[in-house]
Length: 126
Ligand SMILES: [Zn+2]
Image (cartoon, rainbow, N blue to C red; front, top):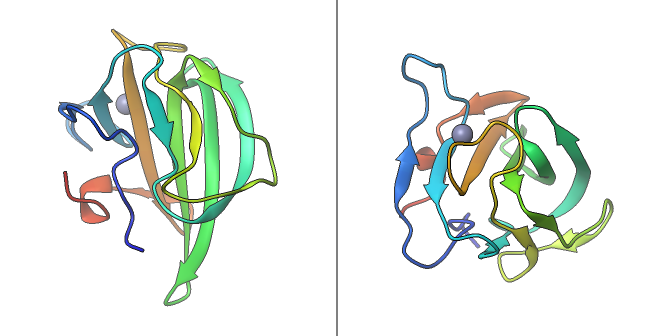
């Protein structure tokens, strides 16, 4: 299954990848508590809190042509998964929020190839 957008209803982009602030992900507007899904099959590698991303979840995915892949979900209001849990695009891993450095409720979605941030829009279509 191809990677899916982590929020599914009324998906609008609030901030693109790169730009002047070297944004390392894609911001998707959401309503508080709106379910945040894993993008595709993987295993929860990390659940934590950082000043920047607030409550976040990192999922590790199967490598594709030897490229290691991870996804990050930030600014969550709640986290409803645990490290080690297997997830797929039907799994809810938390609810959208504005924890950390967030202006307004949105999901920060980060995609990583071999630990390097890449534009999520090269993985998903909205
Ligand atoms: Zn962001």
